Image 1 (tube, rainbow, N blue to C red):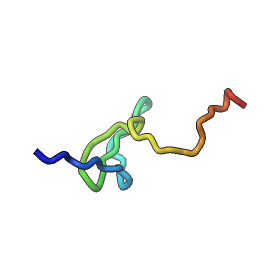
Image 2: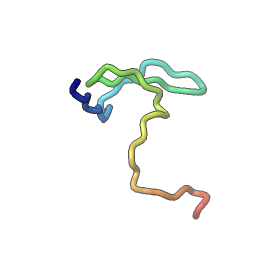
Image 3: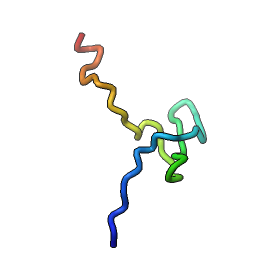
Amino acid sequence: MPQKETCPHRRRRLIAKDQDAEYVECLDCGELLEKDELTEPSGFDESLSDA
């Protein structure tokens, strides 16, 4: 069985939002994700507590 390529989920739309979480749908693959699951590298590896 061929291995499925992973989608970077770059194009997405907001599906639902409450005070604890936001849910988005990837417009490329259709997967539903919690926004906290999406990690995009920001270039920083330090938090403000390190300042």
